[in-house]
Length: 221
Ligand code: ADP
Ligand code: 5GP
Image (cartoon, rainbow, N blue to C red; front, side, top):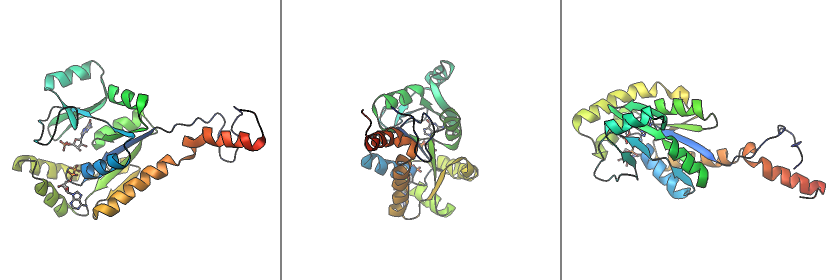
């Protein structure tokens, strides 16, 4: 293959169509709702199933939303170097295993991380090409309404999550994109627009561009 020579292309540029996307938010802002829609529209994006020491909610199944594990097992994984990132969030441990990323790289078009800002910081350091999105509620009283409306947490946990939200919002500067989830349709429209835009980046299409260029020049494949 000839060296890339088009305007803006850098020498030796490789295509990497694999999209790594972090979606993060304070609890209750709507990140799971948005991610579920994204997974429906982009089934080739593999959802990164995290490990956690928190208990499953009635609607959750082990291996689907999370790998639910004991604190001992989680700490064993930390010691064994099994995590790409991990953090304590709302009094529980959560982490992304290296295996999740390897599995996605082996067979999917991308990977979707639903992780908090501490995890986002670690993944960004490890995988600089990752794209990160922070979802925020339009106001804190609406965040509270949503968290309570979801009905998955007891009072103490709800209060803990609301209190933590203020600290989490302070980290918005870590993210590439911010989506205010006021109207769900509009927020989802923005999220899918980010996926389409990121998938259209030149570096993801370098090989295809070069192939076309070679054809235009009359080169043999
Ligand atoms: P998170 O994953 O960020 O904790 P969820 O996706 O579970 O949040 O959403 C919290 C609650 O808010 C859910 O009951 C969900 O149906 C609701 N919700 C999500 N987005 C909106 C929105 N734009 N307007 C109103 N309610 C919403
Ligand atoms: P929940 O208990 O509501 O499912 O998640 C609580 C918080 O933990 C959310 O902010 C969620 O994004 C975050 N979280 C889930 N999995 C991981 C993970 O693997 N690593 C990190 N750092 N945070 C996670």
